[in-house]
Length: 153
Length: 159
Image (cartoon, rainbow over all chains, first blue to last red; front, side, top):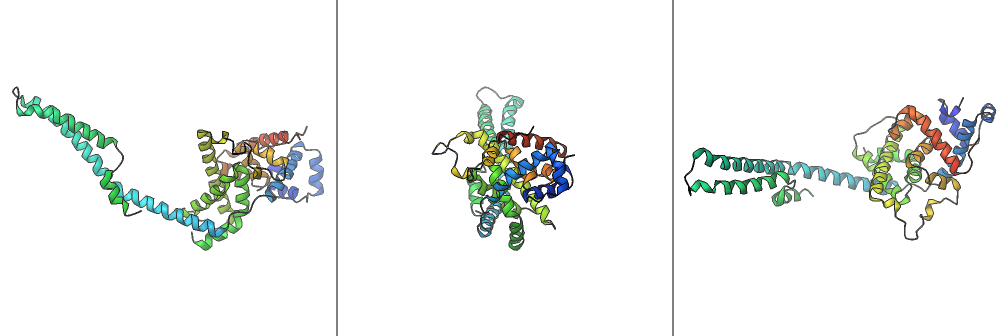
């Protein structure tokens, strides 16, 4: 049997580390290669625990953690504040794409004569589609969005 | 979590957690950052427990995940391949020339964590599995491999 997998694992490890192994476990270990392995590893690792550096002081840790927490809150507030702008941004893009489709289809429906005013339709459609595509694919809320969220930082 | 509550958790867990991070991290400069970040996550979380052991498990799990993320990041950018100014690992990686430290640092990060959690912290397999995010049943096999590897590194393989 290997003691290191039994419910008393923690006690077994602690007893090896403190060199306070009972006679029964010593007798068991003499004939159990697995337990010998465990004991050897525990003995090797123990000095590494003892020689570890001291943890950074609590005051520093708390101050930094608090700063991080405040920055995290600001970042979340900033994201929330810019959400309506992002939706508006996308809606504008979608409207422009829709308008471009309309301008493309409208001349065909109205059957314009050569050189008519409606010939500018395809040109406007192209411009609207380009602008809409840029707005739809861009993630930034733009200058207005950045200005609106600047105050929360 | 209040400052007082965090201080209580810090006093009961900090020394063990920092030792774990230092040895498992591989990069001493990263240890303080990971430690700091671990407590910052606890402070920013909604986690609450009655027992100290639950905080201990929670913090060890956060630290393990943070170290894993850092390892992936450094692997991606190959920072772990870059020598430092002297072309040698920092002196603080070696503790009074103890072979065990070198043996440990030559092992895979997961094996380092496994050995530390099992044989320094003395945690049961279930808790180790929870902290490392692996199946409880595989901890036993992974530990056996890690032990053998460490003893091989130390030139003390048992027959």
